[in-house]
Image (cartoon, rainbow, N blue to C red; front, side):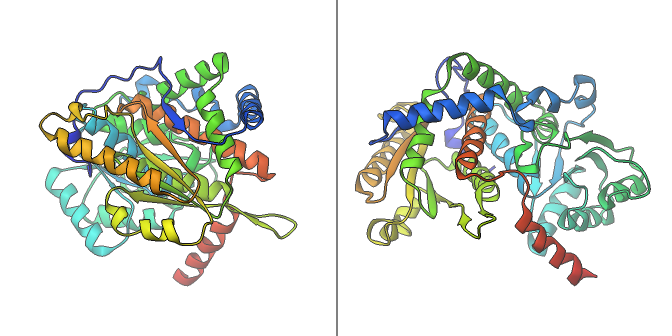
Length: 401
């Protein structure tokens, strides 16, 4: 875990409160009303990923995921959501068990992860929606060469027949009696955090596998009953301030993994070449505060005025009292956050997250998925699939022969 243990404390989310609040100026009331209508449409005619019950793994199946040291192999949506959830659980005082996520092919990084797994007798969890991800297949071979056991595999359902996906075929050939869990085939990888992709790593870490999914279900049902003023304001604000990039400036280290998850969700869903030849999309840029005050702030203050900034943090007491003996540092963080916000010359808002509990993260993820889908609707594009990325995959396969 990358977060400082100084942030660790027992957190119980108050789910009666909004999962975040947005402070943003100049949001037209009509734009918020239009956003509320978009939210209502998504909830009334839910896309595949929002049929959350379909992605729930039955209790008797999820209990078969081994609890204990686990090396998870996965890239993009197969890794980012789980990493964020485990980070929240750590700082919420839930003491998750050792789950290490490997989403790199740098030999130095891989060697360190393999040595970590070997020393602990870790099992391997393989996550690949297509069961064809070349990086995952290559990492899997490295794990099997170390005699590591594949305990769990998460992918689309096996269609049967002779064309068995290579990762599935290799796992079965290893003969480890691997538990195979399924992602609903109509749910894309970056939209799959509320399926086995999020549930199984939580189980391996000896946590409630429904921490994220259950919270998302409750938040969805609450929004169906009462709407969401905060989500509507967020959508209206970004609509009023379009641009080629969007900065997520995280003033808590805990939020960096969530920001990386948002980056993939938005970039892969909204980056499109339209039929008329026009290009749409925004580059989501996570920043660390206060560290990036000393690296990127100058550009954002005096550079080209094309983009917008979200100051992202937890809704902590401004006195810093919750940090105990480190209250001075907590207070300094908030002072620097506010000074940065007030100095920005780009359109800037403040988004303060309710607390550090995984239940809050689940609701927060649901909001961002809805926002992405609604923005895509406004752009007139399909946010599902990744047609351009497939060109890279074909190039990799061609070079590897």
